[in-house]
Length: 181
Image (cartoon, one colour):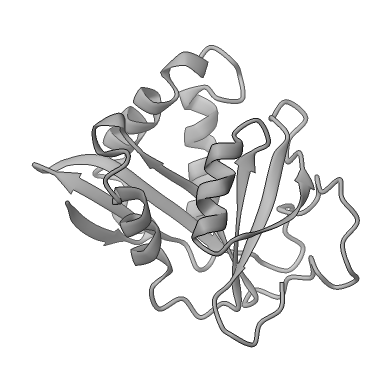
């Protein structure tokens, strides 16, 4: 698998292919508003407008088979607004340098179980300057949560980021040894 880093301005030529990957992975859920391709494309667009945006795309035979993207959480971010779990004071304070939010990580069935997701994940986080990374895992997917825990993530709290979204487990992993989630 070939990995390619992309900045926001470098997504336009492959955006339709990224939407196709999303549609393949979420084929059984596309009828719901939250998981529709249109809503996903909207969320992708929001992310590309935030400072610190980065993406990594994995290719096999010049076809995207997976990708991950995210951005640096800014002061006043809505990322934590749906948090339903009490957390220590300051745990959700963002200043535009503290936390990288991994918004999506997905791979098609063809490469699942091959280490492709971990390779894409690690490439996306390589060289990040933030203290920590956060991601959301659907609460109803404990196997995915276990995978992230094996990678070093810890449960942070329950969050529902949108009124029509599923309940998620917010997870956090330190990117530097002395950082505290």
